[in-house]
Figure 1 (tube, rainbow, N blue to C red):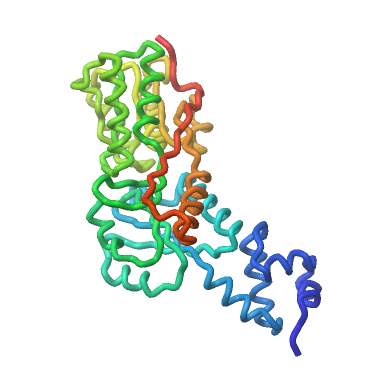
Figure 2 (figure 1 turned 60 degrees about the vertical axis):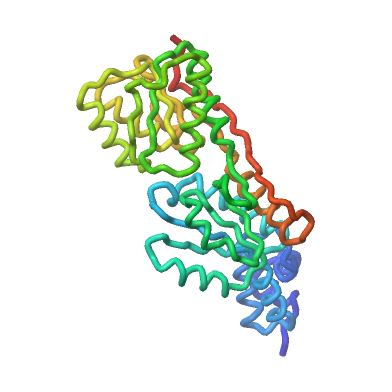
Length: 337
């Protein structure tokens, strides 16, 4: 005999309102509670559960995470917060979020074909580690698609990303405004579009302040916590001439630099100032705490979903590039000279 929603709520020791919100795919319910209710509804024979479950599953957005190098796109607070923003906005609009990983070192054609066979209403493609050639596999998709965290000048597509040029420019301007004229660059040796744009912003600021761009203070660093630390230690082992400040491509590199400088008895910021990029949680736990550029990570994910909704609803057919500005967060790792 079919079970009612009220009886289902009693069996699960949940309020009828909570069960109703789940069965009607309303936002504001945790994924765990949603899963518990839907599983129980199917198990106890709730009369509309199968129909409702299929409806929920059919209203799906795929978040495709493209992994090429593995040194940038990883399980970090940056990408978890972006995913939180995506998930919240999907839930708010009544969509189920499904996350799929696509690996560059595996059979891409097969992975793409599998993705095409997946039923979904729209695709968010994390392009952080992608090149234009990588994106070519997605050009013939009929499903509405938005690129997140990357942009390609020679491809006509929708993209939502951070204004990396502006962020790096403002970070370097901040150092110059505090009297630094020898400003080094802790440069990621994994070259993705985000880092290339940050490099452009860094050099743009140097030129604006008449600081020579052909200086010896550029250090190529692997953008992972331990390897970045080892790379900087190897650099310091040769006792190089140091600038008075460094701009780092991201907070992982900047935090590793603070740790390495301390290992070699170089005081931050008394001897060398450092500024990062992203405002990850680690910034508040380095010693000294890290001055950085705040990236609105959850907002980035939510905006990508909102733009995808426009595409899915057919309300806006023009290709749009949306760039979010970043904001300086002053802490203790930069000193005026």
